[in-house]
Each structure stands twice: as C-alpha cells, then as structure tokens.
Length: 340
Ligand code: DAH
Image (cartoon, rainbow, N blue to C red; front, side):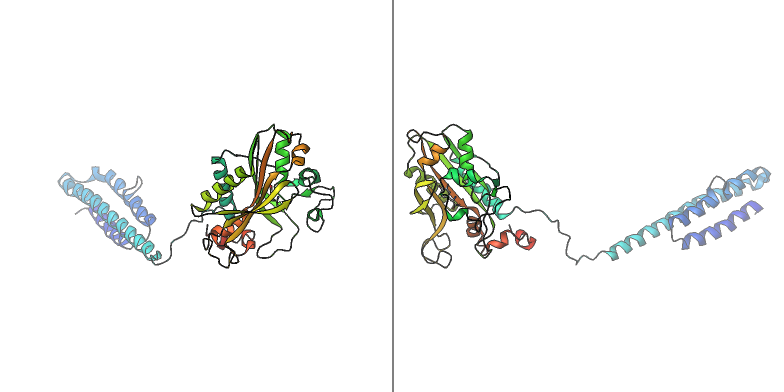
C-alpha cells in the first residue's frame, strides 16, 4: 500500500456513502466531478504515478482502474434508484378512477341544421340560394309586395322601425322583390334568413325567427307545380309517409293564396297534442305570385307566372327535434345546444 492507494480507498469510501444517499442527479454529478472530473482526484493522483516505485505500479494502476469502474457502477445504480422513485411518484399522482378530460367540440345550431337540410332539398329541385338585407326599406318589405297602406302588419306595434324609416324585415319575402328587380325571368330561388317581429316572447313566439322563402317564375307555372314542389319537399324532409294539405288563405302578394300543412309527423295524422288533434301542422304560407307584384318589378304578367312560399324554419326545427319552447333556440344555453 502506498499513499496514492490510500487516498483512492478513502475517497471511494466517501463516494459510496454519498452516492447511497444522493437524492438528485446533481448530487451524483458532484461526486463524479470531485473524483473523475478534469480537476478531480483521480487525474490529480495519476500525475503522481511517476513517483511510485516500479514494484508498486501495478497495484496502484489496478486501484485506479477498479476505482473508476466501481464509481461508474455506483453512479449508475444511484441514477437508476432516482428514476424509479420518480416513476413511483408520478404513478401515485395519477388517479385512474378520475373521469377523463373531455374535448369540448362545437355543435351546429338546430336552426342551422334544418336550414342546410331545406336548402339541400330545394337545390336538388333546381333552386339556387339568394340573400337579402335584414335591414329593409318599407318599399321592399311591404309596398312592392302589394301590402295595403293600412295593413296591420305595418303597424309600429308589429314591426321594428328605425328612426330613418327603414325596418327590420318582417319576412323573407322582400328577397323575392330584390331578386326579380335584378334578374330577368325565369327565376328559381330560395332565400333562408332571419326575420323580426314585435311580439311578446312565449313558447311559440319570438321577436326574431327564421324563414326560408321560395320563388319560382317561368312561363305557364300553375298551382299544381307549387303543390308538387311542396309535396316533394315534405317527402324529402320526413319520408314517404309525409302528406301535405293546402288550405285557402290570404296574402297580399299572392292570388290565390294558400296555407301549407304537413301531416303531423308525431302521430302520422292520427291526432295528438302537437297537432292539436287535427292531424296536420301548419308549416308555410304560399300562393301564385300576384300579377301586381310582377308588374312592380317590371315582369309582364301576361307572359310570366309563378309561385312563392315562405316556410317557418323554427317550426320545422321544433318538430324535428321535439323542442317544445321556441326560446330554447335563442338562449344559447350550451346544455341545450350540446344535444345536437
Ligand atoms: N311572408 C309570409 C309570412 O311571413 C309567408 C308567405 C306567404 C311567403 C305566402 C310567401 C307566400 O312567399 O307566397 O307570413
């Protein structure tokens, strides 16, 4: 034994203790630097090898080599120990019985779903989509649609007017006028959108609701064409059992005018609370476009004729999804909207 071997042995004893209790990777690294680092004990002692008598060199060299190997083993073991306790800690922190985290995906609004469905059905029948402003003028919303000056729907109690005389459109029908003003016949359009009426909100009324307007102008269009388009729409929407019924009615912009009912899809026409035992549900107004309306847009009623209809989209959505209060459609409650 010489002084170098003694120093190595002493250092190894200390290192073994330190590594056994090392609690962080930094503490292990500190031991490595102290003994094996560039300015550590082993390199320093190796410079003293020259002064070791030849007969002790082999033992001294062995002490160096086995010391280095031993250190490496202890450090590996210490790192392994730290890793496994860290793994145990994270495993303990995870509770597999907790409910998973849910991604909140968006949902389409029921009105949007129904609107897209209606548009798709009418597109297949050759209609294109038209659009118009929600802030309308009196001319397009009422006058051009042949609405008499004293018609109650013009009343400030029924319609929202702006101070400049314009209004929030009360129906999608003004889009008919705008399309005919800017297009030569024939015309085949649908126009979905929001409409506004001054109403006291309740389960079936809102101040804001949705319609889809239809307009078909060509030569020799008849009420039979209207009926077949509406029947096709009902069948596409609710299947082969859907039936429709037209009832005489009055609208200023159509002559003759009809109201359009679906056979009740809840009871298939047998009678239930939803259809108030009538077997039918009112869906739309419709009719043959009044010759005066055609004249108002510069179409010759002797050449052109056509039909128009206006469907309530909120009503369709409520029937489809069995929603019994229209206000759900406007309250933006995610508990409701998340169901679609
Ligand atoms: N605009 C009417 C309403 O809001 C619905 C309507 C009836 C539209 C007859 C039409 C139609 O295009 O021809 O009550």
